[in-house]
Length: 458
Ligand SMILES: Nc1ncnc2c1ncn2[C@@H]1O[C@H](COP(=O)(O)OP(=O)(O)OP(=O)(O)O)[C@@H](O)[C@H]1O
Ligand SMILES: [Mg+2]
Image (cartoon, rainbow, N blue to C red; front, top):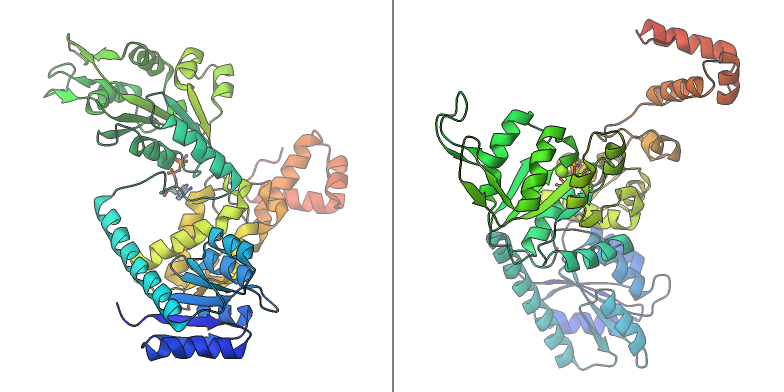
């Protein structure tokens, strides 16, 4: 590790200078400033700091606010809080908010130096640990799932209870909300974590193929079955089987699946032997299965078999507080992957991210951040790197969500509004124009335009 870079923030210049001098004499690279705003500006500049030492009580921006902002933007920076006598309660808050440590003023030089050394040792350990963890692919409690909002806290609590059991789990939620990720985390946090995790994509296969995929087949079971093949059920033995997008499974296959779930045994296609299995089932769906049942596309008995432990994942827009966290997470990840030196995200850009409607949920945020990392050649990602269509961040656009998360143009929104209004007013053009607040002539012109584009406007 090179020399540690430290930023000292205090409005009292003699303390600031004394701390800085003490550290400089030990060869640390030290810079100073007198308030939180300046500190944030300095942190956003090119060279990264390892540690920020800040006073708690300062005019303009308090040390706690500075701390919180640092926590949001710079996952890897340590903060050491200096507090005056009698502000222990604040110091405790600071630690809870992510300060590494605090020093009660006045303190001797030696104490300061020891604390700094401790922080640096801890940083080193953390880095090694992180590298090691990545290498082993090891995961502790759900740490692949990012989110600290109340909804997510409740989710972790639910997962904590469900994961260790063998119970069947049904994970529902919109596209890109993290269903597969949650399924993997359930496996990784269960006693079966060292067993296999096998995924079956129920949407991708025709039914006949699906059967052999799940159960396997004996040589000669059907034309083209040139050798015996194990199915996913057998492969998942001792581990977890993920039935992804279960709502897309055909009715015939559903009946066969039901039997396996009830009996925990099956036969290969063309096989006589009954195979017993020990597997845990996790299924996902982004459709409302109750509605599918009503419309006779999903078996009710299968639903009840699967819905033993239901978990519903929120839309990203339902937890906007997590957006900065997720955005920073993806920023760091892709900055690493693309070898880019990025410090963080500009405030204005963060605001925009938080206002956007995220029809494609976390997956869309992930893609947008990847693109931002590629496009950004400045220390901080700004609005222009995000390619958020301004329209999309307006509430009006939120009503017209595209399920694949793609951008939507003003013209499309207009068109969609016109067709909805027409439908609502049973094709009565006078009423439709009135409802939309446009003249009947404008409406006619628009409809002619659409007709010319080849749209059937009735
Ligand atoms: N809470 C989260 N923290 C970190 N990454 C997440 C989170 N939620 C989702 N992701 C990431 O977003 C992407 C999409 O997640 P995932 O594939 O699990 O979604 P899904 O709900 O299965 O979507 P679909 O219904 O479209 O299959 C993945 O790369 C996943 O790692
Ligand atoms: Mg999925």
